[in-house]
Image (cartoon, rainbow, N blue to C red; front, side, top):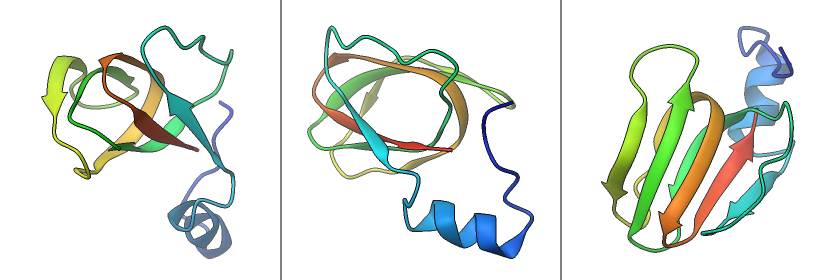
Amino acid sequence: MAYENIQADTNFYRQSFGQKGFRLIIPGSVAVANEEYRVIVPLDDSTVTAVALAGDNLTAAAVPAGFEVYGLFTSVTVTAGRVLAYIA
């Protein structure tokens, strides 16, 4: 697993402030191998597909601009709009 466990205080704070960075994902973006994401934030109303390590996946879900989706995602693709995906 490439992500850091957020049970340790320092790891939690690093990820909650986005210190590991983010990816701007737009339609046609090429995924970075073995990268995982903690939060998905659409900049525009977007259509998002995301694969989660636990819980449900999103499949062509309409996500409004600014709505934050939390989890641990192994894949995020966008077919409409623009999304920031924060690296886990």
